[in-house]
Length: 236
Length: 340
Image 1 (tube, each protein chain N blue to C red):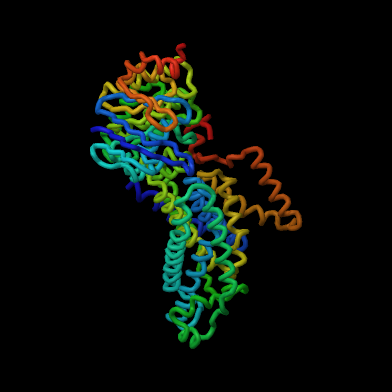
Image 2 (cartoon, rainbow over the protein chains, first blue to last red; image 1 turned 45 degrees about the horizontal axis):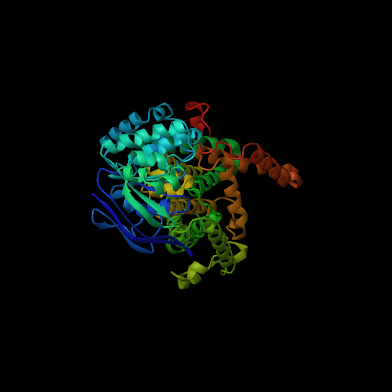
């Protein structure tokens, strides 16, 4: 199970958002995309999950081409996307949100099992199971977004800015859980502005700048490199 | 058992309304009770589109009109074929009426598919524009239709295709047999509510709600959003078509294009908004309330519209999510304090 992106191009109207991005996610890894606002991180994820249509290049998952497939077919291949801004269903309860996470599945026993596993990862959600999701705190909403994506039982989990707008303590908790999810066998492609945290949990990292890959290396190597430290880790 | 019990309940309630309630209150209030059932059907079905999937259709009366005219053509001209005149018949007439209702619903559903498919592929307000246009085009076309045929020979000559355009124009489709009974209205109304309820409570139906909540996230969950939106729209059109056929055969009703124009569409939208987008019980209660209100205010006819408008403004200011929001009557007891 490998995700291979080659020469990916995405246009938003006249804006050339991605210019020939190539990257690879090996099974069992956490791979992170870091970079500043507008670098094309989220766009890359959206192209993988089918929410935007690429204008060029290829995306292959298990050697199957993904480009051009609609999102609802891509989910069925085992790729779940927790979108930026969480995208929870605010007027539905936590329970109903989780139920929609397993929308594509029909194996009741497996779903119940995965639900218990997800709630074990996020005990806070169990307490709020019958509360409207819109009444959750930001951190809890992020937990819900991740738990919901897990209920599709993905082989590849796409996480878009899980630290966005959260208190540092909560960010620590969320990243701990991301690592746990990965240790349990799910491959993760993580987009983050919080490069510090992202490089700490990831195995491999890509730095995106204005729609193109500027650097790529092991996360530990990038975390130590001067260029990354200056540009993204705030070390002078 | 689980699926049979509610259907039995619908039949029992409809029978009670038919045998006890309507004869008891007399013909005037009997008609109000029929109108409540028909309006509840329209509001609940529109709620499947506007409330569940969050799309905005403002041409629901158009589907009602299609169902009404199709149903009326079948019973009126069908009676000529079967019995030589449009006079009401007994049980066989009722049978023809039920066929007319179902055919009206099906043809309305076909129109729903044709109108819905292109506009629901897009996000945003296109549906509102298209449904508005659809309702108006339909109204104009019906107004320009030919006079109703009243002679058996003329009917024989025009059959089968020719009668489609002989629906009375702006003056209305006169002579439609009065077949609508409280039983028929409340059986169809009950089934509409049942389908909407089952839909809302199922995982499948929750996918409709997810489209309203966040279309992009719904797609990321694997929901085929276009397909579901079209299905919701077709289903709503089907029930609106049946409601239209029930309306067309009511005692004292002459089917006219004007009655089923934009004003009627808007009345239905108001019922849905007032009851709460997505709340089935809210739709039913709002439909009942907004059917009774104009009748109750009839004695101060001049002030009626003012009171009506004022009431809406007050409700919208004090409770913008409608009476129940997305929740139901029975949820209030189950989950006190839940945010609507």
